[in-house]
Image (cartoon, rainbow, N blue to C red):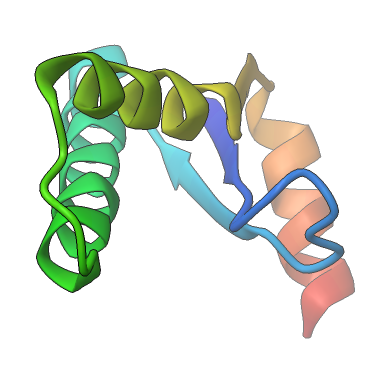
Length: 83
């Protein structure tokens, strides 16, 4: 099982945390979320964004993602603690 933590910025104290059973599902979610966040920034920017700036935005977003492999017992303990 994979645990993904995706922060809003590097100071985020309450990041989004998701659990995935499959690596490809985790990768799909990460790429979708990064794409959505980058697109939101582009859509709301008062300035045009160059290809280089777009790549830098993507790099920044990917730097906010952390993932790790956890065993099922660790996941169950987290779920129980959260209730």
